[in-house]
Image (cartoon, rainbow, N blue to C red; front, side):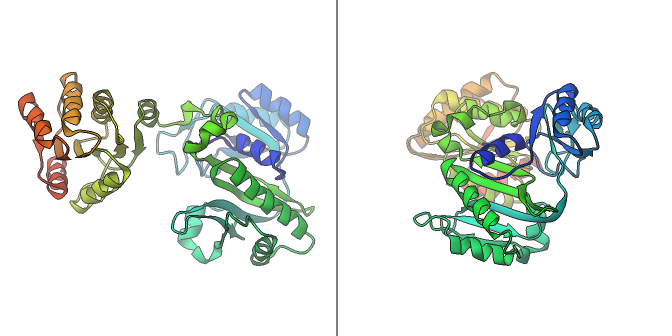
Length: 385
């Protein structure tokens, strides 16, 4: 689960990571009052769950409180377009007003999970302030990786190696040891999948400060992080992802035009690969799970059919606990209330497959069946192109 920058900074501050003084504001008047408490230059930052805010004009400096109020008024209520939002942008409903820093250097520091060795990894770079994806693509050697054994934790010698590659001077080494150690404590204690400081700045008066921060919490751990779960902002979530989540479905939006309904993450990935192999592009990753009932199957089908980007639907189910006839019943029931103007291809295998196919045949719906995955992918790609 994503949270806003100001919320991420509050969490980091709890663990002793230094951040600029500031508060969030929902009105220009609130922004001006916060700036009055800071004195001097302030940064006004749009709070949306998207990166690249600076490039989109969502991070601006004000010389005084009146300027902060004016900028907040220009940002609040507007749709901010960044490289990560798409052309429609995201509506700004809050801004963060905080003290502007005099910057000497910008560093990058993050902790995430490396799934291959199944270990936490620290990513560190002297090229802070850049988008990490852009940095990885253009200057991969500028990103240094340090694996962490959870049984040992983040050891001081590892932090000293990081300090060496980041050219942290002796006078800043104690502060850097503290920041890195506290960042790892945050990552572990808060069940994070990502904690990122970009940039971690060295100020002109020789302090380390987290100028921008991102914290992403593992959704599976939210039951033991109730205070963070309460920070969920549904307005920032994709409406389809939100609707699917409320129905107990796993949905991820992609850029293609073929809707995919499958059961199981592995089958979902294989299906998406097969669609691309056949020359198409999946519009989503929709997993109904291993124990979906007729109602959930129907909900999943309606979500796909209601998506204006979808030009065809591929249903690929391996019947185990989820029986094929139950899948067919769910789809047929959902289709009865819909205008079926999109091509639908179904590939069923496993438990009660004969019964499932029979339900589709008897339904009278224009649903095409396939013999295997490649046949299914080829057919649906052929219908939408």
